Every structure is written in C-alpha cells, then in structure tokens.
Amino acid sequence: MRRALRESPPNETPWKGVWLRLSLAAMLAGASSAIAGSVWLGTKLMVDPDGLHWLSKRLPTWTDIALDSSNAPQTLDEIRTRIRASGRIPAEPVSLTAGSLEGDLLFPVLKERPSPCDVQCRQIVELQVYQRLSNENSVADGLNGDRGFYYLADRVAVSGPPESFAIAPLVDAKSVAPGSTRPLPLTNIQRLTENAPPEGVWLNLIGERPTGDTQLTYGQVFLYNRDRYHLSLMLQWSSPSGQLPYWQDFTGGGTAEFVVERTLGLEPDFEVYRLQPRNFLLNPVQLQPISLNEAALDSRTYKNALLLARSGLWSPAQQILESIRQESGTRWTPDAQAQLDTIAFHADVTRTQARASWASPNQKVLAALLDGRWTQGLETLEAHLDGGSEMVQMLAADTNRLWRRIDAAVRVNPTDEDAIVWGVLVLALQQDRPRAIAWLREQENVSPETFERCVRLLNRLQLGNPQVDEVWDTEEDVTSEVEEF
Image 1 (cartoon, rainbow, N blue to C red):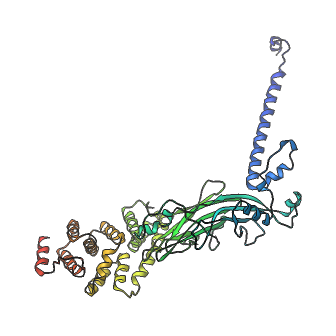
Image 2: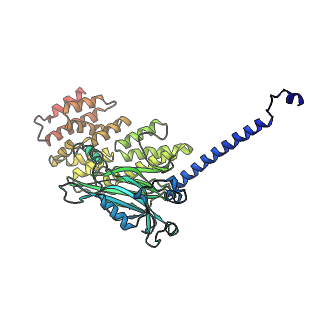
Image 3: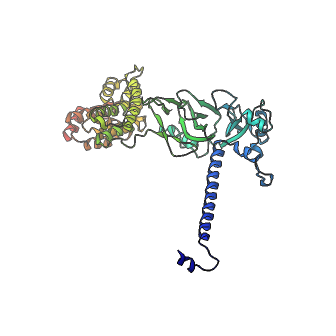
C-alpha cells in the first residue's frame, strides 16, 4: 500500500476515482428518475386526459405550455355552439355510461348532404367523445361544478363504407352492376347493448339505400374503450335484406358472437365474428370472422365438408362434420366446433325451407336443390315438368348458385347419380345439350340407366322450352343415344 502511494503522481489521491464513480452513479440515477417520471406522466395522460390541465396549473409560468382552446372544459351548450360555429350540426349526445347523460358522452357531428336529397339529408362525419369533469376537479379549476363540464377526450372522422363493399351481396347474386369506391353516407347511430360483451361500449353507425325491391342496409361498428377514452372502428357490414347486425351466442360456447345477416332470397348467408384479444393498448380486442376457408383439422374428409359448405350445401356438410366429431374424440378443437356451429346454423335455414309447404312446384324444387336434396328435387321435377315452361325457365335463368352446388357434390361424391342428372339438366338449359352430354360422358361409373334417364329428361325439358326448335323425342333417338353411350 505504501509503495502504491509513493508511486502515485503528485496532487492525486485514491479518493478521486471514488468521487468520479459516485458522480456517474448520481447522473444515471437522475436519468432513470426522469425516464420513470416521463413514463408515469405519459401513462397518466393516456388514462386521464385532464392530466395536462392539472399539470399546467402547477408548473411555473415561464414553462408556457400551450393548451388547445378547443379542449378547455365546456358545458353541453358550449360544445353544441362550438360545433355549429364550425359549420356542422351537433346531433343528440349518446351516453357512454349506464344510460345516463351525467357521465361521458358521444357527440355525433353531422353535415348536410348535397342535393338532390329526399330523405336522411344529414350524414355523420365525425364522432367526438367527451369525458365529464368531476365536481371536485371543476371546483379546483375555478368552475361551477353544478353546471357539468366536459373535456374532449377523442375524436374520429367518419367516412362510410365504399359503394362496392355495400352492394357486394347483390353483385354476387348478379342483380346489380359492381359499384364505385365512393363512400356511402351513414345517417343513424345505435348503441348495441343486448347480449353485448362487457369490453367497452359498442356503437353501430347505419345507412340505407333502396335497391330495386330491397332496402339495402349497411354500416360500421365502433368500440369505445372506457379505460383509454378511445374510439376504434371494428368492422364494416352490409345486409341486402335490411337486417341490422346483432350479438348472439351463435356457437353455443357461452360467449356472444357478432352476427351480420347477408341473406338474399332463399340463399342463407350469415357472417359470424368472434371477439379475440390482441396486443394493442388503446383497444385490446378485435372481431375475427369464423372462416370456412381453412380447415380446423387436417383431414381430407373435413376439407371436403368445408368445400360443400362454401358451395351452399350446408346440410351435407353438417352431416360429415358431425360424423368426424364423433370419431375425433379429444382431437376435436374449439375452432372445429366453431366451424361446425356456423355450418349448422345455415343448415337449419335450408332444411326448414326444403321442408316447407310451397305453393309453387318451382319453389319446392329450388328449395330442395339449395339443401342438396337431389332425389327429392328430381321427383318433384318429373311430377310437374309437363305442366308448362315455368320450371324450365326457372332452371335456365338461375344464377351460379345451382351449378356450384352440383359441381361440389359430384367432386366430393362422384357416385351420386341424382346430382349428376341435375348437372346434365342445368348445363343443357344454361348452355346447350351437346355440352351437357359431353360433361355426362366425363363422369365415372355412370350407369346406362342413368344415361337413359338423362336423355329422356332432356327431351321433356326441351318440349317445355319454347326457345329450343329441335326436339329429340322419338324412341329411336333415345335408344340410339343409350347404345352410343
């Protein structure tokens, strides 16, 4: 030790290094405190938007933090006056608490729609969320706590869904031409409360558009996060039958799903969304659709069932999945159950339609085919085919919904000869007889009896079709066709 001291340079002591290390430690501690304070302040301001006002009153005047005058505490009348001064129209506020206007509020902001406009001439262009200032904070800020003051906590510009999205169900049915990308107006707002999950406040913005004989309804769903004072757009929806979306325990799991009905005529179509968590502080949940595109189980039979379902053959798809569930045991997953529940919901609709007492044989045949009841449909067709050309015209004018079902059924079960017969009939009526016969020859294991049945039915269909001039209706023609086959 003495030697070390003797070798030290003049005027330098061992304590200098100690003081240097202590100084560095103090600086690091100060920096850590500043970071921690910043994190605390940021969190407080995110949770409590009033925090900036609280902070500004406690800082020296030389800091001169500028506050947005639009976010100064205001009464409801002052809020309405400010919205009107911007050239917009304040709608009636919507409560964001338990049905009381004494808590946080949502102000829909409207503007006049351009002429010509017959009905619903105002549209929503913005949503403004106001947090009510407590009476204690009002008094502390020098305000009259009895009047009720609010701070602007969040605001979201609103632009309706594109026209092409809203009319997509009608385009699929080939009843209208594809639409443009221009946004459609949203004119009404609804708070979704029945069966709604407790994660925040669910708001439904709605618009309407007359389309032929139907009233197309469309909209957007927003979620208000009470803890973060934050509004989020969750999804856009469209219903060609004018039905509003709703919360329902769709899959039977005890938790409600969000259901959008897109049914058009006898074709059931329900979009189902599950509420799922996500890693986002301002909105920790999202709506995910129950999709039938990806199989929940790695099985060829399971994938065939989803193919049938996507083609509209809900009942056959449900039967296959029910069988797989019984055989799977513990391999059956919640995602597989969600897909089965979605398919079963649609199958209930098509089964009910197929069993109904229809006034018209045409409707009875169509309902049977939409449920994949090929034998029942053929029996009704053969019993009423000689009654006129309406049956022929109905089959000839039908869109792709029949053919996609027939094609899927034959691909999954190539031995279903009743489905093959329907394939021949639909192809002959929608294209021509040679194309239908060629398709029939391409099928495997078709018996001569089935081929003869197809030829005879084609003759009867052509007799009922005034657009066909040439009719092969002689016994010799039928025999010749069968022998050639």
